[in-house]
Length: 118
Image (tube, rainbow, N blue to C red; front, side, top):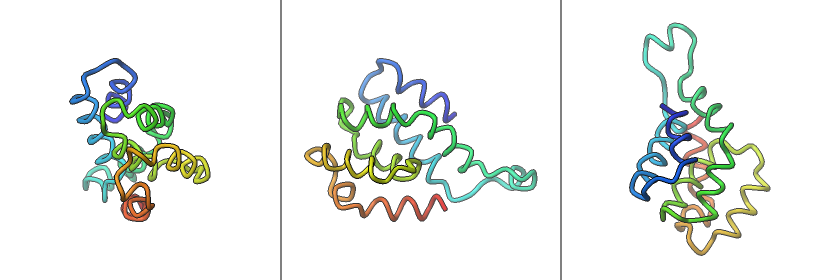
């Protein structure tokens, strides 16, 4: 599911669909746990999703910087969970400040989502 959402963002899809896939990515990377059967097998599904999304960071940066779906905030919030380079994230925060929601401009979403992701 995570790979499909990233692939969709790489395509030219309608802004409404872009928003839906960004919401889906946000849910998968900020998940609070995994189902019982997966946990029994030693799988951490949210962590696996974060690893997949980490391979598509450029798609999220493009989404933030282009603001084409008007969902730059959601893309940025996903980045706060999966981007290890905090200086790069801060640089994008400054560039995109005019169209990011207040929580993204101030960094308050960083702590909330990062805490959920573990």
